[in-house]
Image (cartoon, rainbow, N blue to C red):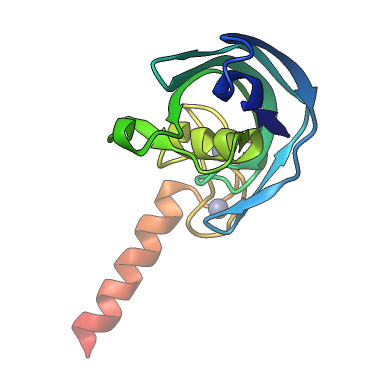
Length: 166
Ligand SMILES: [Zn+2]
Ligand SMILES: [Zn+2]
């Protein structure tokens, strides 16, 4: 989804309303496929002042990704505010103001970057995700496995015996 800044940069207008709904392709992030489960809705405004375009848009969508603890797929609702500043005047470029050589931006790139920025390091299906059993690999959110703590202690004790008798 390309957003044109043409009119703003030529000062044919000073503000542009943004009200879009579009589909986005899934993408890979650290080996995990991030799939869009809803169209992306973007609503806001782009305006220009002293060669700087202020791009202020509220974006909402649903993505599906993998829980790092139980490896199950889960969905996450995003409702984020994207605020960026762009300029095509090299003198105005700074750490916060992005220099653009074309008179448009690719909204999908902007959204991807914002998703990556807002994803936690540990993506969890829920805060109290119980994860997988270290022994049998069962998903402990769905079922309780038979590896009780006692069994594990007994096995550890046996292992210890083995090492000690060596
Ligand atoms: Zn999980
Ligand atoms: Zn188990």
